[in-house]
Structure formats: C-alpha cells, structure tokens
Length: 150
Image (cartoon, rainbow, N blue to C red; front, side, top):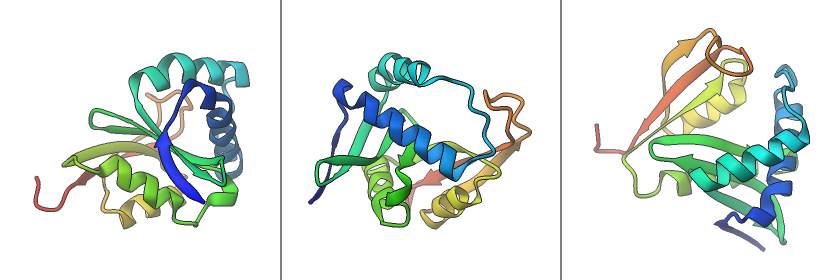
C-alpha cells in the first residue's frame, strides 16, 4: 500500500537517509560536504520549519519526498530502489497542485533529473558555473508554468 502524507520531525532520520542515498548513488560526482549530523540539523532546523514536505510511503516505509516553499521546489529525492516507479511523478504532481508557477535548480551533470523535469513541463531558463551553490557544481534553473498561465 502506498500513500503521500506530510512529513513530521520523526521522519527526519529517514529523510536524511533517502537524501544521502539518492545523492551518493545518482550523483556520485557531488562533493560530500556535510556529516549525517549536519544533515539532520539542516532538515530539523531549516527544511521542515520552512517548507511543505511531503513523503511517499510504500508499506509504511518512506521511499521519497518533496520539499517546496513559495515558488521553489528545493527537494525531490527518491530512494534508488524507487527510481522509475512513478513515485517522483506523484510527488511532483502534489508539489505543482494548485499553483501556476514553480522553479528549481538542477545540477547540469544530473541529466536524468533534467529529463524528468522537462517531461513534466519544466523549461531550462538559466545556466550557471556553480560558483553560487555550495557544491560549486554547474547548475540549471528550470521553470514550470501551469497550462494557460504565463
């Protein structure tokens, strides 16, 4: 059985696990800048208080999450075992529900994520050399507009 629900502070250890596993498997070229304790503090002090965070569960186990606020999608991560299962599309649909615009950053080397977002109607708008992100990796800002909005 699967469902999507709002994240709680009790979910932070699993959110951090999914976040780190997705990044290490899907983006092995990213520098690992923080400890697990740092990530736990980041999710506890910054992500959950300042974002809507929804988790996807399969049989009671979190296998993905999305975090968004205002016009930004700041987090969409799936456990690697959940890749290409439709879970990312379900979470993204919830993040786009009832809004006319969202934007996000994606690393330039993460071509799989770029293709996913393009498939869901996002367009590349801006490319950077990465000097302004923490990882110092080139990235792309993408935008999504609801059909019929500008």
